[in-house]
Image 1 (spheres, rainbow, N blue to C red):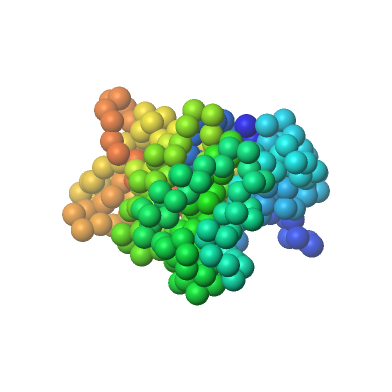
Image 2: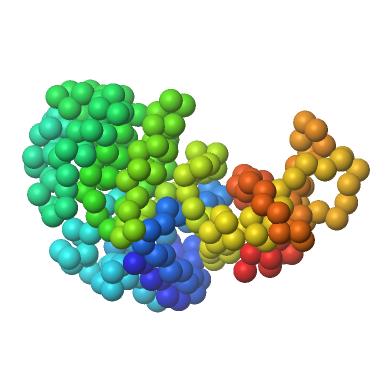
Length: 274
């Protein structure tokens, strides 16, 4: 689906990625995490062909992203962090844009607008920012492209809308579709993604399915005086800790705790996830 090989990219003298490699497969919802400024949005733009690698390559379905050929564009939809919509209704936007996507479903689009409680006859520019985001998310899902990229899609959504978002995204995944969601709000990805990507120090340092993370690590609570953990933070009932999974027992992955451990340059923790 997405193949990135030896990708190097930066702005001016600032290098964001250096010889970065990544392969993404259909049938997965990927969560892309990284510190502010790590280059999450820029990596997504490389996948969408909106910026071009200085070295290396990025292909989607075997097509060079930077060439943005029609066959490439009709199988990709990108929901940016900031949306700028025309002064038309959602219904008019549908009529003017949907024909670019051969697998677009009007029925699906209208159903998701209803789920999001957005009126299709309201002028888009008069909607709140959160409502505009919902329109773009619904449209992106309804394109049924093989690759859907969303950059900070939950920004501007209230708590009930975030719950709706998770439900709708999960229901739209198919075996031949790949979704990538970038966010700095780690908890918004709980119970949604199946594979975690962490961008740190110009590389993807973690690219693992959550089930595999749970096979290698245990997320637990330990007494405040405990030792022997890979990474820990003080919590209400002691230490929220990550330890090697030596028993094979399953524990729910605490993505926020794991992310904090990774970006603290905890090499033993990073090594266990390679």
